[in-house]
Image (cartoon, rainbow, N blue to C red; front, side):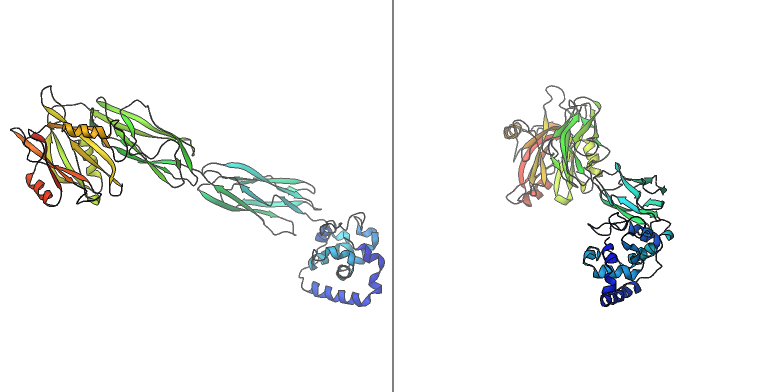
Amino acid sequence: MRLSHVLQTGVWCRLPTVRARAVAAAWLLFSAVSGAQDANHGKQLYNTSLAPGELSCSAGACHGPNPLARQNKIQNGDTPDGIAFALNTVVQMAGLRGHINGAQILDLAAYIADPASATGAPTLQLSPSALNFSATAPGNTAPAQTLSISNTGTAALSIGTVSSSSSEFPVTTNCATVAVGSSCTVTAGFAPGTLGARSATLSIAHNDVSLANPLLVALTGDSAAAFVSFSPSDGLTFPPTTVGRNAMMQTVEVSNTGNLPLTLASVALNPSASSFVISVAGTTCVSGFVLAAASTCLLGIVYTPAAPGGEQVQLVIQHTGIGGSTSLPVSGTGVAVGAGNATMTEFRYAPLDYYFMTSREGEKALLDSLNGWSRTGESFPVLPDSGDAGSGRKGISRYYFDQVARNNSRGSHFYTLVESEKLALTTLNPGNAQQPRLPFNEGSDAWAYAPVIEGVGGSCASGQLPVYRLFRAAAKFPDDPNHRFTTSRVLYDQFVALGWDGEGVKFCVAAQ
């Protein structure tokens, strides 16, 4: 502080008019300041540089550490108007203008006038002024960070309650009484409970009258992560399925429930050698796939038991999300081929007007439990296996065409025991790849007998019922293919009248 120039030159005496104006300005300044003078605060100001590039009053080149030494006539600044006059009139003190207010001038004058009245005051210095934590997943804890509290004042600093406004930002401290020239620390952590940007306020109670009390410190952090979850979450269970037959494909929905993207490093069944396979046709979750935040992909699994009894594998996805690996149990039960009859039962899915039939009891139970599916009342007897050599039974092969209807949103099943039709379908997909719009052979659904005469006008052997096939073709039903099978000639003729193609007799079953 450069009070010395004005105090030594005596310009106050030579410039009475200027002095009068400055005193008047000081009176206006001090009249707006309430509260008593604080010599302790004045002592802090005396020992502090009040503006960039300016010395403190206590500097040896200025007035020295003790005002009573009267170095450079510091006693001329023992009144507020004296200090104000110097600030307003001396060019060399222009650097302090705007950096010292009326209350500070009052306190500074009180200390200069009576240094003994300043018993000392603490000065709290905080570093850093705020804490920001790196991205941390919910349930995890970020590395702790510390705040340093230093006492650069002239009396002991007392630290009271130190608290956080949020349990996600826990705090601890060793601060209590901080001696002059000493410091202590406050340690803060970050343990987010949910995703997203998080914030809290650290509150520090203290006895430094020059600062707001409590002192508030901003705590911020970001909770970010990627998580893999499955639906269904408890696993896939296939219905009992006859050995050698394909169960209806089941689908797993894989979701990223976090707010960061993740990459699927690998998608596999463990063990890999089993009766379960991942269907290419029903799968979008593949190795290398990037699953965006809050998005899903699909994984289809087909079960073809090779032997009777229960079997279980794990669907395992390695990924870059939390945990690195997520698994789901997949199980099924193979049923031995047996004698006797089975029943082919027709279902309809009303939302898409889609007909489907199956002889598999497990699939029937599944469809009975699903919304939108209902039995049509149409059924006919079939055989559960190929029988003995020479029985004449033919396998009813079940094919699935994925993404062939309703703007690629629906597939369709097709059944046949006619060898020429099977050959034509095999030619279309010789590797039996599970790909959209190609016929995928799901194996034999049941067994029946070949017609004596196949097709329109066809017939069966004595004691057998003809099974007629209907087709909802594209000419009259664009983008909505579907087949129906019935032993009822009345129903067959009725649907032909509605525009369906009548394809005649396609297989024969025992008369009931």
